[in-house]
Length: 291
Length: 145
Image 1 (tube, rainbow over the protein chains, first blue to last red):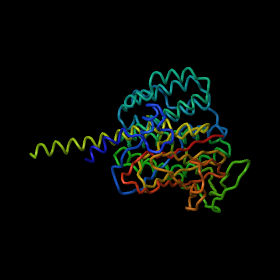
Image 2 (image 1 turned 90 degrees about the vertical axis):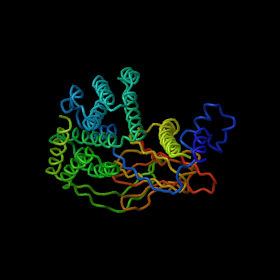
Image 3 (image 1 turned 135 degrees about the vertical axis):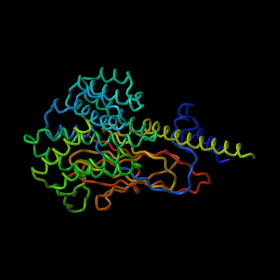
């Protein structure tokens, strides 16, 4: 009987949708998506950890006055050499970082090349259909329109993360997120000698996102590859130890020009030696995975 | 009932449960794409997939860092079958910054003056319904500026 209910539930329309009665067949099908009779009775708490997306990090780097450095990117030719799931997943994240960086800095041909490279690794991971030939063609046709490329990249990687979650590929998801984070910090720390104060602060603030990333990796069932990654991230965390984060007054909200602004937040302090240690530590780990 | 029939039935039931779980997950991705993503409007989505299948009484939490001087939209998008979801934003010390309980919007637009870690807490309301439903809940973050 529960089994019958369960099967019956898949086709049910959501109740109390207002216009449900007048909707078309397609609309009614859409209403039923994402719901069914509950398969458990006991409530629980689900905890997520989010890290900045590679596009978000690239935007921060651009706003901080960094200059595009093509030599810092991981060569696309290396992609064929990544044969294990671990190396494909981490380097998919690294290439996602390079792709985002190229898009944000209007490196149009490079952006399409990196999207193609991501496609190659997705093929190896069994999710090649997400970056289809049509998607590559769409990116190619919009190569001069940055906003379109940003949408294509964010939608694609959201789809990928959704598919990984759906298919129980948490290990791949965690490794890709870590690869993307590592590449973002790597790209941000290549020219520390000419870095603006804003960029230096952004690098130091990554101590907070590293904490979120470690929470994310820890939230997945441990595997050898995730344990290796966690150890690598702990090494980077040690380099961030010189960043002091001091809690200020409790955050409060105020309206400014119609927007809610949350004030407060911590004070972040660092010195040049700490930034150098972060740069060296991240480069070491990144180059180990990208070799 | 013979042992073979019992095992066959158990195996079939297990397969159906696994199939339905996978089917719901796939439906969640479609639901989120069609119903939630458009609500981010001009905000660039963060590509993290913070979506879960929840039931009445469940809670979900998202731990993340918001960067100073960027504008954010925090969007809580749930299947209508779950009722009106409520959410709170807490600072790193657990102090409440925002509570949706007395508001009608499913999103919160804001800026942070300084980069800070925050927690987003979402509640699915309890229900007296005889047959409880589960549905997708997605915590989405978009940024701009």
